[in-house]
Amino acid sequence: MSSIVFENLTKYFQSSLALDRLNLEVKSGELITLLGPSGCGKTTTLRMLAGFITPDEGKIIVDDRIISAPKNSLPPEKRNMSMIFQSYAIWPHLTVFENVAFGLRLRKVGKKELSDRVAQALALVHLEKLAHRYPSELSGGQQQRVSLARAVVVEPQILLLDEPLSNLDASLREAMRNEILTLHKRLKLTTVYVTHDRIEALALADRVVVMKAGKIQQVGTPEEIYEHPNTEFVASFIGRCNLLSGKLISRNSVEVNGMLFRVADIAKEIGVGDGVVLCIRPHAVIMNSAHYLMDGETANSLGARVEHCEYLGEFREYTLKLDKSNLSLCAIAPPHIRHQPNSLVDISIPIASCRVLPAEVKSAKSPYVMQKV
Image 1: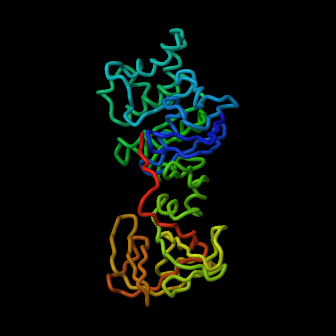
Image 2 (image 1 turned 60 degrees about the vertical axis):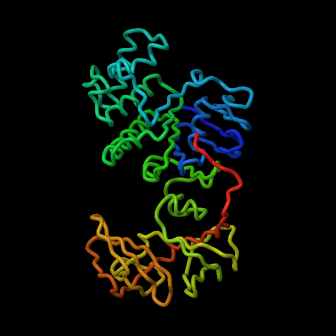
């Protein structure tokens, strides 16, 4: 296991700034996810850590040793890291056994040790019975397991994953998430996982690193990122939310279109009188509230009219128009909660679920163009 430090890491591609003075520490044995939209710099960060790209400024330090710097970068093969790609990147003409053994043969590992280590790696990913099959005879999930076995069999210090599940269907993605998490818990490898899928990030990570335009927006546990986002961007990217523009009237109230919302969760940098954004997750909008509020829970009680309802199996999703305003809210309710369009409903929003964020300055033109490399 190894610790990683990214210090003022900066990268340009021609005139485009891809990574802007990134600073981050990864603890030994930790699994972090780099999460963000295309072009945010997450893949560039991973490839720089792997040694495929050299930084223009800053450095990467692993266990107090500089491995990447503008004029002094260690070659990828000397970093003792394994990388798993989106495309699996396994050899089609080699069997499962030979694919997994490939890295060990390059290291000139003896025949008996090689056989034992490959068998152990295949057992870790439950492929020991498929050792003599070729990739064309495997499913997508099985091919990704081959990639995992090949990555861990060489006993790396650090494991890197670049959107490894994006080519799988929904059910396979869930199964492979569980495989990766189980493998991480058993091997305790320091792991950096790149994804644009918030579900993957929340399900896998010890900490989530949310990125935008080459910069880190927020770092925290999945619960911290979801429940207490620092910005409007983080709030909307990490999960669905109602974002209402308003003004902070006092330390416990926000005015939105003439309506007052009582609040309790306010970002530290916001002052009374500032323009703000009120963030309310759809699941926090409680319909038939008398039956679902916890004892002693205080809430904003509102009237609304149902504009639209969709039945989605595990839940119903409602669009609600608030009384005496032009505000609409999205609400998620259990499937047995049924309200017809145009019906009037009472709703409650717990005060603790009203997160107050600083209003973001909207820019029509970005000062630089971001790209994914």
